[in-house]
Image (cartoon, rainbow, N blue to C red; front, side, top):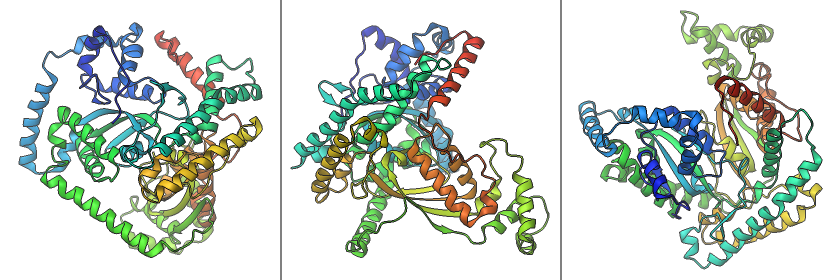
Length: 547
């Protein structure tokens, strides 16, 4: 793992020491902080270029108006946190032995920060759906043009750097960052000229909207090796499972990251992660590795000679033809004393207009997208095959109540050059360096397909499938189509809605908060709303929050 590029004065170290398990490594656990402070800290973390410890120091502890130092002094506990953890371990060990229930591990939670990890690693960390809550540094609100010690921030992946492809890898990554850095300021000026600020918009809102638009346009250049920061909150059971999958991962970065995370988690929730790679845990690690090997073997055997076909970007593959009657049955079930089978038979006798009336009256009371239909909608299932750029996948992967699985990153599905780059005169340069990345990928992937992922720019398309129910469809399609959303994932959400509406109009017609419009300056209205909220907070608490 790369070293954390952070240093503190002796005075700063004394201030920070109680709140982190270390001050000189890139993996560390937060401690002795109230849960609400941790949540606020991680939330701010996702939109800041600062590392977490610097962020806590400068924007929380040193801001007297927030009153955090006073709060911490008031609740300070003089007991050594490691001693407390040891006592907790002894207690939980007794509970685990007495009840033999792994779910006890869900009673202890932990915040952990993973800094200077690749975009590839963040996807592995965020892939777990239950028990973990991730928040990642955004490519939409933070620029990635900076160099540290003369080097752009991307992972010098160990296996690649020890291979014949080391120079090709670094040259390609440097070229991608060079173009990103070169066109950043001209693209900001382009959007400033294209969308001049009006009198009703604050400087803060306007600057943020221009920044987001610039990042949206050029972030496709960033290679998947780009280093970022990630905050995770999870329970012990979820962390143990995550560590086992990462230990099993063939990429050296994942194995190293698992080891570092494991070491830090042992300091805080030792009882719940000690089995991650012991004799019992090793059998699980072996299981994953053997399962993946079998999948790879038969995928190559069956499909190596099958040519790739051109398919729609969003394609509905499977759906339940009986979904509408199943949903109605489930919706009415809890309000009767009848069996599921009996209700189903009755629903089957209803006319289309009668079914439509029930749906309309049931869903007519939805006032906004947060008003979700009931669990009955979970009985209708859909499977979509999707290909979109890696950035769009990264945004949509954040949804938890569904099944998603992606293929390896590659340059085989092509990329789309943003229209704004044509208008601003940078399309040719963008396409040239993207082509260079594909040529490098093709060379490396012949021998190192897994490691070749690191060189793939995030503007290239990746293929994945989503299997989800109708209730989650409402959540995903309405949330991800909002005006301030990125155009790439807005398109995916809009197409998913249209495809499902074709086959199940009674279920989908009430999804009235899907925004099918197209926008050019997406973030401006959201930033104006943020201004309004900031003014309310200032009036209420007398605190002005600054970006």
